[in-house]
Image (cartoon, rainbow, N blue to C red; front, side, top):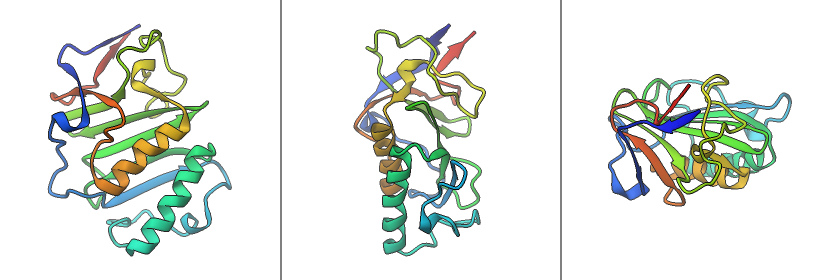
Length: 181
């Protein structure tokens, strides 16, 4: 069973200021691909401090295109996009499975936001993918369809902002936007 947390609001991406710490662009990226399915330019990509920010614009563009193809093709298990170079705070995480994505923005005790379709008829049912493989996600806060999930993730990667394509369930106290039991 699920319900939205009492402090959660359903907002458009431009209706609140996304806390990002001292950086306004993605600095660090970590991706786990399905075994032996990493695109060519991602095979040597190291999980080092500031790895994404250190790339040339041309390399970032190529890697972004390959990442989109990999997400849509079901070749990505999970991804984390961090605003800090160390990969610790202020991050968007996405887990993929069975044609679904669990996407959550987490800003250490300040904000948690997930894509949301509050009008989905089966929205309070369990989605087929969890956050971190353990935290259940209601269908209203899951993303059905890897194409849409890729657009949401890549929008953050390229702009440092939440996608305006969807509404967001936002909890400004830093808790998950939903409760489950």
